[in-house]
Amino acid sequence: MAYVTRLFRQVPWLINPPKRKPQQQQSPVQRKAEARREEKLELIRQQVKDGSLVIRKMTAAERSEFPAKPPRAKKPRR
Image (cartoon, rainbow, N blue to C red):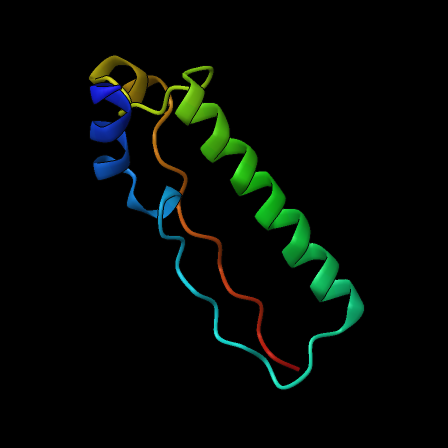
């Protein structure tokens, strides 16, 4: 259980996910997408809590094998 507590300190967004700014009106598609996202995050939280999912830092060997991807270039506005 101590490991899970330590993990939550390392990954604080699992306990308190950042609040998104409320839009004037969300479309039904956006509401559904937000609901699916929340369900997925809840599943991750549950799996971490019961120990079936472990989130850890990458080792140096893994980092060299899978380097960070460069940020995408933004598309110009029309």
